[in-house]
Image (cartoon, rainbow, N blue to C red; front, side):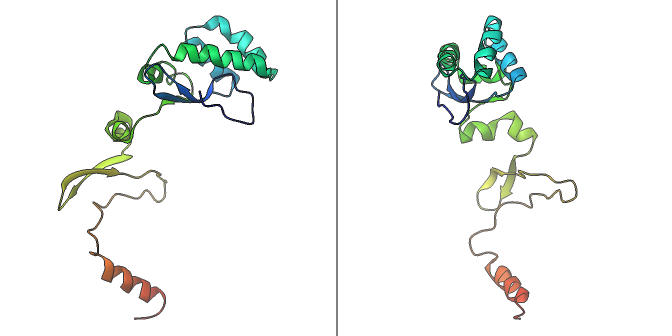
Length: 164
């Protein structure tokens, strides 16, 4: 795992390597989250001793816990741990761009949308990443071709500066 600095880490935070060489990004830093994660790993007997060492900032014990957790994570691929741990604690499989763009979550939340480009046909692109109640915004279509809006943009800038 890639250790974060500045706080006690018992192997429940950071980029945690899994059995297929991929990573799970875990941000398990609260006791209730840690409890759920360790139970999801299949070791409920670890919960109380791990939490005790973690609360005591026992660095040597935390290194041992990190090794134990790492060994368990190496038994399954990231996609499986995403389902197992991600459903009960803040942890997610680190996807490639292509995997994210094809994911059910990206499509259902419209963070990735398909637009019709006049030159290239159907294309996926980033959708709205932030939605605000009073200014919801919308994707207007594909990006304009290079130079298509130059005159309009320059005219708008000139008008804003009082030059027409």
